[in-house]
Image 1: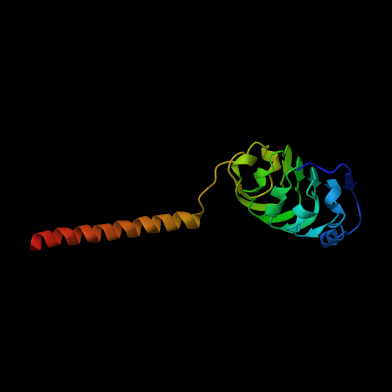
Image 2: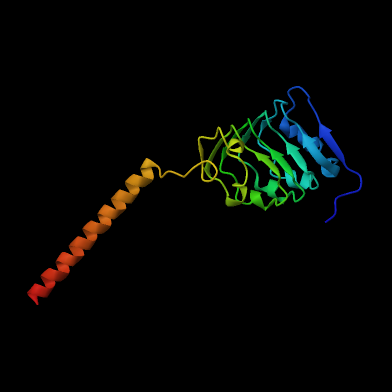
Length: 180
């Protein structure tokens, strides 16, 4: 799929611009190759249909806003994406494993959000600073993932129950062999 011949880049600084107003752009934004809305006090989630609105976007900068919710998997389908900067927002949840399918991605940052979970393997080529400020993120380049206390307790309980059941079954088998 080739990019359209006529394209444009939007770099805007409106005041108190609401992200849902991007609905107004969806019909005309298909020619966008760049969208820089950094520092606009945008809030709410990124629409899941963003990939259909800006299919040819190469630069998507939404840093320094008040955006929240999960990162939409649809961003991965923006196949021309080179730059994706989503730092300094309020995103939560995990980084979608589909996201790395944006193979052209050269610049990426989700620093200073509320993300958690394992960093997808294809994003580990980016610097630690691109993931910093997310208390729940782990894996390369951030560091090893720790097993939570809840999981440790569950593992110990499961091992204990398994050991107890195994001991009882073995004892019954030995007792039965003596009786017979």
